[in-house]
Length: 298
Image (cartoon, rainbow, N blue to C red; front, side):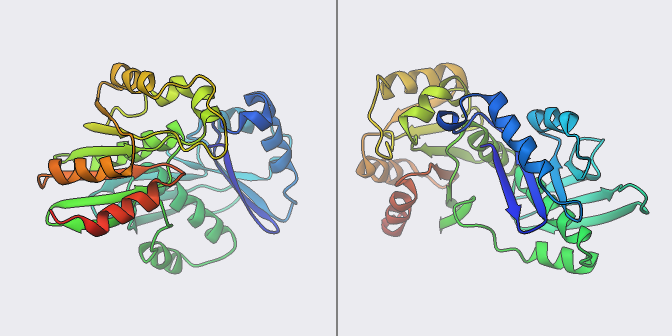
């Protein structure tokens, strides 16, 4: 969502930049300027790590006067190049080619992480890139990644019964939703994917509306909850129209949900044993799905 992580005092990771928080930044060009300023403030004895799989990141790289950065991703021009990705329902595995100026090329084979989706692989590579740069051994990097327990609300499994798994994810931006559902589709090919989405903030839904309605293509069904307002007032947002537009643009079955109880009733009646359920949003949905899961007796 236009995120960067500053690792004090000398390293920064630029993952991806999206149209987010436009109420503050005003425009995507303004957002780019802030990122350029941020990157160029990293001191010479530090380094920035920029994912060039992201189009806007690529635009930024071309405008940087300060060349004190490395790149990573699946883009062939990356200093830390992701190769030979292999995924299943439990973990991802990949190779990493390292090509840094004035240094011997490295090829790291069979790096394994207990995470799903190319977005999580990119994040793992960013961590590995920083670790290599500060002198951590390849052996310890591999050990750290394979034993990583994940981050809360990032594709966390919170319920499992027979063949039914329910996950929770913080995804509340179209790019995040698409990434999560793509990971589901790629790794649970024969499962029915049920997405439960709670929109977050009327302002975000308005600004990113055209992207949201195209974000659910990899689901089989989408349960759409009322907007978690976060204190904002509704200015002409129609949940009914949003549901219809998701049907039209994502080509998916949509069910409009009015409250938490309806989610529980729906899941009890419709989970037959071959489903993956993924709850997404930045509001109360995480608490809802945990509470519902604790009472499900399928």
